[in-house]
Figure 1 (cartoon, rainbow, N blue to C red):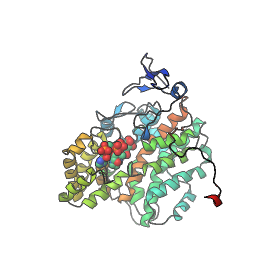
Figure 2 (tube, protein in one colour):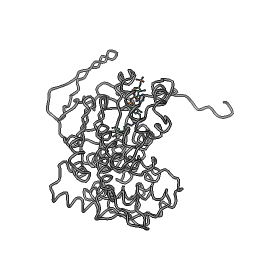
Figure 3 (cartoon, rainbow, N blue to C red):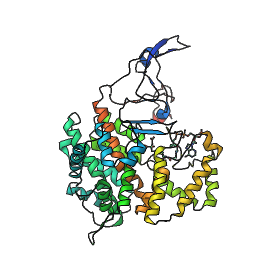
Figure 4 (tube, rainbow, N blue to C red):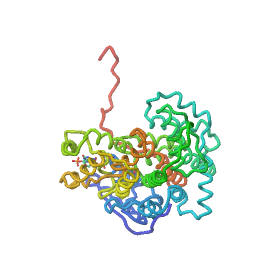
Length: 434
Ligand code: SDX
């Protein structure tokens, strides 16, 4: 991987052992440089300690850059605001995977290749029959995506670049099909096959909301809004689910297993599952006059409740995605003629929180999940599908990170260490002596 040459170093001295060592600092294209501590244990006889990896870089990456203090997000150097406004999700997928925006011909071939992988093996239909009808779509997605490894044996050799390319296209293409099947199964309607003459978001909406009984025309306003949501969710550097995909990938696991692991991690309410919890939280608040009570709970150190859709490990300023989605939410609801009283509750909650010392001091702002649910709900999706939609958008980011990991000569199996604080060594006591 590329490293900027510099004589920047940090020297440390252990005031107990007297050991001292100097470690190089590596500078990237943008953002904070990193202290290279790969020889730290050998030189100092210590391990570093950083629960939750709040200050630890796991890799070098050329894919996505975030500046949390400035509220900046760039995919391969392009600002997210420009991509959301001027590009589309298929272009963004190409950009994340290959590092450059496609030419017209490259884009046409990419879209053709992806669209011709949208169908799933017909036996996969049987996966769904094993689930309860009221299964959460993310539980189905974990199972069905992991199960793809049982079908596509011709793209499991991660050392083979062609296998990795085929698996990458298959996952980008089939995630919407599987998510739509998960949705249809819960509502008891027959699966709708993908159509190769439809756009990516349009095809997904058609698979979700069409029925065999009549023609279904996808509203172009809805398709464009969903395409933009997929773009905004496409990647986010080393977030929890991307790090899960990388960790699974570092063991040599096949791509379908790695993406299923990413889906599982995304499901958590502190991560991608927050978009579902935001709507549940707003439903619980109910009306604007009850917002203060919920904010009070969120501030109470003795109450584990957190305001879903607020705060972020990296953004200590506005999440640029939230700004784009908030604007889109108002536009889409107006275009669809939808009045959602919970939107007023959300706006009031955001205003009260952003003026409250507790949130100001901790630099807590709305994140990508705070407003996305309004658009998805107005489109007709149940709250239980929100995180599955996040997973569709994020799959390309997970795949780009996974490919970068496999191609990185510096990467090896991820295996953190620990500080042991358990019982000291002791001898076994037979049962009759306890
Ligand atoms: C995503 O990492 C990514 O990039 C993720 C993501 C992506 O695209 O992949 O951006 C997607 O996951 C967005 C985040 C969605 N999650 C939520 O909206 C859940 C609510 N948010 C919190 O759980 C929290 O803000 C996290 C998990 C997002 C971030 O947690 P951190 O970085 O570990 O921060 P922290 O828990 O240490 O909080 C610092 C302080 C604490 O107070 P003190 O102990 O200092 O007194 O801020 C408080 C926290 O209690 N705090 C909140 C809060 N978030 C943090 N208090 C109330 N409500 C909140 N939402």
